[in-house]
Image (cartoon, rainbow, N blue to C red; front, top):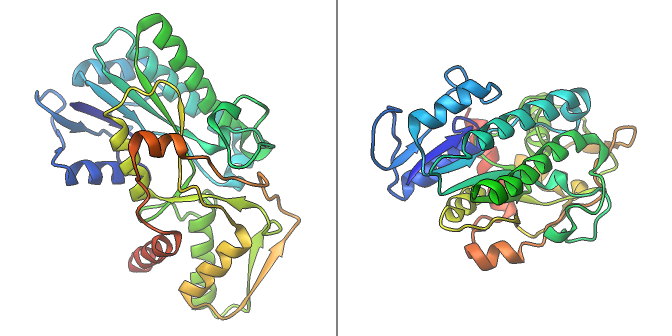
Length: 313
């Protein structure tokens, strides 16, 4: 395989590269070099929102497989503040990439989707066939719908051009190299940062957005990368959930992180801020049947590894 990885320098991309390295698949550093391996690039060299640069990337590297992991992502606050950016950038990167592949000899393009695409009110656990049964939760609808647009495009290009694809809908990932920015981080890095700073500054309490009753499902990023790499061996051509299949509410999650960090203060939930989607938990029976068991790290062990990495920064 000649694997092109978009977003290869990002949080998920780094772990995809590490996984490929562990399997003996090495990086190709010269885009013109022939042979098997994977290639990553910087946005300053090839901007996927620019159609010409995107096409040049495909034609220069001539991949047999593509993993589209590049995305503009963030937590509830960032999604509420910049919905247009999340919508436009995610759509344009994916649309340009898929269209640039339409008449090329590409075996498969793996598109990384998101649990945010599911309707706000959905039977739990979420099943792939329920994806189109309603509007996503409002705080991240722009991001979720942008990913559904790419699924529609992939299906259309499969019918018209024979472009094979896999569409993997991932739950919230966490782990080393995650984004710990106060403005744009997801829930786990945000909580880790809050508790570590509260401990270091002897704060009497940690305030958390929402009621604490909303539930989420989390997948350690190394397990997510393993599922993505395994999918390269299959032509799935339909949505497939990737997750741990385990649900935990934010209050319980905060208590676990508090314990690992060894913070002694209180936890206060501020219900003036939104919870986001009430519940999130995926039915992962399809992906386990096709890919096997890719979940190897428990939430507790994954949190310990993530906190250890964060403290070592």
